[in-house]
Length: 491
Image (cartoon, rainbow, N blue to C red; front, side, top):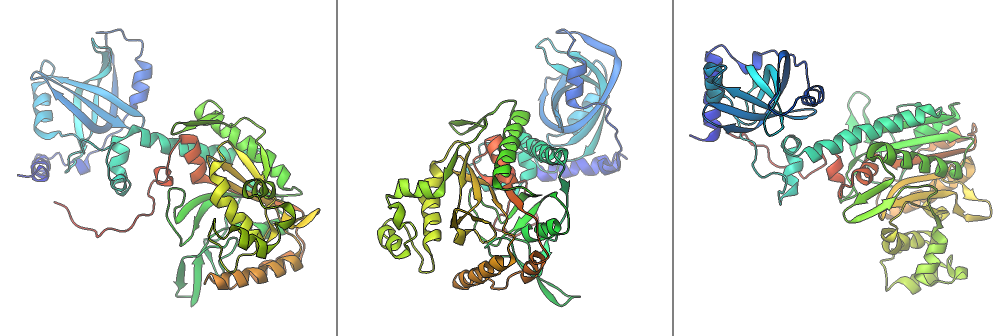
């Protein structure tokens, strides 16, 4: 018989005996962690026989010594060892050997002792099988060569790898900290539509759907930006949203089509204010989650002490490319000078060439947290122009370990300028075969007047990557987007 058939037969025998695991009830009074904390005073070989505990979890390892059995169970807080011996109950020991396998979920009750080897252990006097695992747990899971197998069976990944569980516990704590950080500073949390009639707020390819009742084509949002700015126009001064964006584009170590973003907007502020806020947020996240400002990723370690360095994209381009400052806006000169170094599309103006050069040759070299500031206007259609040089904008991106983790700017509030930039965006979208429609209602909203405002988007997934040291975005998303496999029934 196969392992599945052996386990299935055990399940049938349990049901016939009136012990159907799927109908059992169990209320644990302790977690594994609480047992270890409460009984840490026990000395080696000491037994607290007058206090009972109940704990539940998944059986991981089983060691049978003939007259006794040791096994470990895993719950949400960690693992705890349990012990059954025939001296207490031969019937209980026989039941365990006949019906319990690794992977089963059990509930146990008993007292607590510390073994001679020093491990806190539950001395079991009753046991219920709460779910029968019909498949054995994988023996070698952590070091799988096919990493995608872990992501496809994330439930097994979480069972077998405590480090993976810790990543997602930290993710929860990071998001919770961000939410409280902003609320404490007067921001309120809002929600904006996932389904949008016009994809807006970024240049990206959207996912399309169709609403039957409304007889309307809709799009899954690529960004919530224009809806959030409508709320600023409506009178809110400080708002934020934590939610999903979806873009029908590539997958990489830093990109997933469905990703989590924090977007925040503050009236009567500019991008300098948001740089200060961002420094405070990132440094505090690192300190609270990791207990220090240093973050390690692979063999590299960097420090999140404030203030973060600030570098101009214009100055960096001049320094690395060798292009004279007086030629930086000469599109024809740039194309000729750089055509052998990088791919330059016909529709790229000087601003897009500068940005492409930066992203290709400079960005990956920025390791310590660094604000890259003042992007070309043609690459920043929603950002306010710099007063001293209108061809550049009051915009920054935060780079860490060569990865962009935040994008912010002083918001463009001039409706006529916004209209012109939307018209330029239509030309770019036409070249890239993207949807050409723009959110003209937003321009109308701007015509009612928006106060001076700064806005920022922070990639939650990438922030979690930084804080946990994860090397790919798939490691910090519970169910990352993968190429579908044909579903099949397994017996």
